[in-house]
Amino acid sequence: MNSETLLARIFTLEPSHSDPTQLVPPTRSLPAGAHTAGAADWDEAEEFVRLHHAEHPDQPTPLLARLHQIRSQIDHSGTYTHTEDELTFGARVAWRNSSRCIGRLYWKSLRVLDRRQATSAEQIHEHLCEHLRQATNGGRIRPVVSVFAPDTPERRAPRVWNDQLIRYAGYRQESGEVIGDPAYVGFTDMVRRLGWQAPGSPWDVLPLVIDTDEDKPQLFDVPRDVVLEVPLIHPEHEHFADLGLRWHAVPAISNMRLRIGGIDYPLAPFNGWYMGTEIGARNLVDADRYNLLPAIAEHLGLNTSSETTLWRDRALVELNIAVLHSFQTAGVKISDHHTESRHFLTHLEKEERQGRTVPADWSWIVPPVSGGITPVFHRYYEQADQRPNFYLDDDAKARGRGGCPFGH
Ligand code: ARG
Image 1 (cartoon, rainbow, N blue to C red):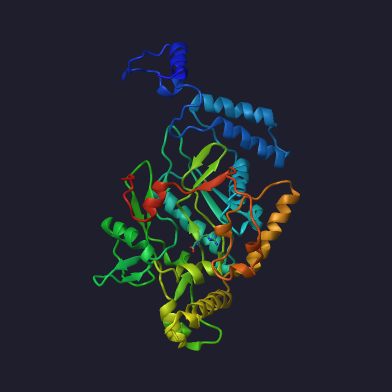
Image 2 (cartoon, rainbow, N blue to C red):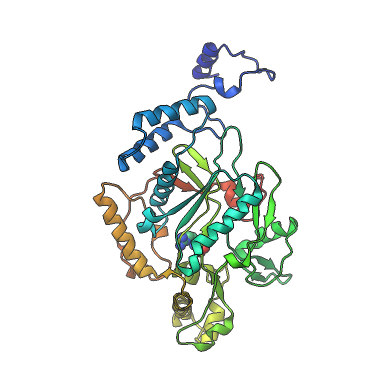
């Protein structure tokens, strides 16, 4: 027993043997700073509220009064409740602090939907569909986050097992070949075991798995009318359309935990709009995703007999032209990596003028094509874990791949 525990026992007169019948909830007699599942962290709460007041001094409740309220809520229940204003500010700053995101210039415009009251899987599903409607906005994509109930000592927060609200299934054939997105073979197998009737095409939108404290995990289809998709065409190669490629308009990450002021919101799906390279240089191209460069090169009649013809690079550029052109033609917002890189540097300057550092991860910020001809390549960035922020936990990552939900 360490001295802190010993002191805690002396002062709370807790018996040294464990007594399962004890009436005092164990959280009450834990030493200061001990971790309880779902408990809010007071130091982080204080730091967050101070930040909120520093950036928005016009608050209805003065700083010290608000800190007192929070302190007594935590003492009483182990956690506290964010005001709408704190939630909105916290979610926006979590985006501002996301060091892997190149698109942070617009962090202040994030639309925050407060969904903390939703408890049943049905209600959550309805809100997720509404999220996609508001985000899609007929192609004029808006950045949105929906914040569901947090983890508390009383109740485990809801979760969605999918890593994004819209993703395509992957089916491994006996030949070893995959139809659809190979990254989702494990997840597809898992939802099939839960009863999903798989259509079997390369572009089947996966169902959502919604996991609440009230019930076992439930499957829900994402209705067709909330999924905007763009068929890929090329501005010069008329027959490019024959490849039958497409992608969805909205990337909505659903497995990252939003942490604001010492409180965890494990279900807080958020989206922006796409940068073309995410689709044209990764999703459709990575060897462990759709792996389409050989098919595109063949379609374009490129000489693939040697690497030195740079057929991969040529096919890659044509595919990226097709992605940007198709989204623009369909009236769906998308950005290119040159524009987005410049915007990011503008963001850095603006933030520095406010006296804030912009933590950034070079290996995520530099686009996966033409890195050296974008300005973000030619410098280094500060690395820091600033809160509020979004975090990807190992168990959430495993669930998104169809791994065991209980972390085994
Ligand atoms: N790269 C991921 C995808 O292709 C999406 C990540 C978030 N991207 C964004 N533009 N907000 O689906």
